[in-house]
Amino acid sequence: AASAADGDGDVDMTGAAIGDSGFSNLVAWVKSHGGRVDGRVDVRVLEPVGIRGGTATADIRQHDELLFCPWELVLGSGGLDDQMTAGGVRSSEAMCAVVRRVASEYRAGAASPWRPYLALDDSLTASRLPASWPRAALAELQGLPP
Image (cartoon, rainbow, N blue to C red; front, side, top):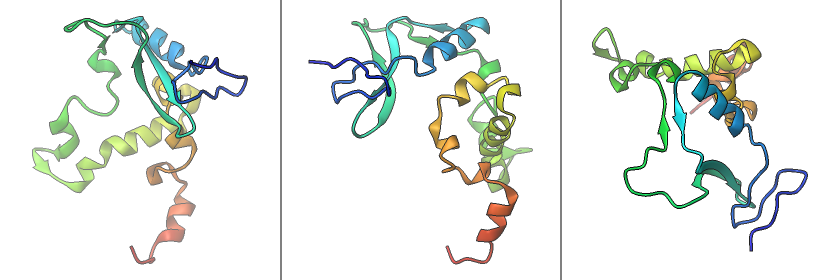
């Protein structure tokens, strides 16, 4: 049987709801920009492993639309070609542009128009993304072997 979420937002392996994970804010944000999110979709966390992902809260028929995200909400590019090339030339600089953009928007905090989305991503707050590290921290790594 699924357990109810406790005050810390933990759940058991059945995927019981985590309360307000910020997903309701994200849904409201998407809808305010002309997007659509089916009410049968939620974000859940499976503990103790901590895997978070989209889940169905009710049966969904084949071909039902679950999400429509307007391009204006896609952070960093208009498509794969934008992410892999700059001026038509494939480059590592272009491949990192989206990561740098995400880090920049994260550093902007509440001023970022993507805050409802970024608030769901704990990898940024856990400092696992080097592009989000301060320059001083990156400088300390220079010269170290890979």
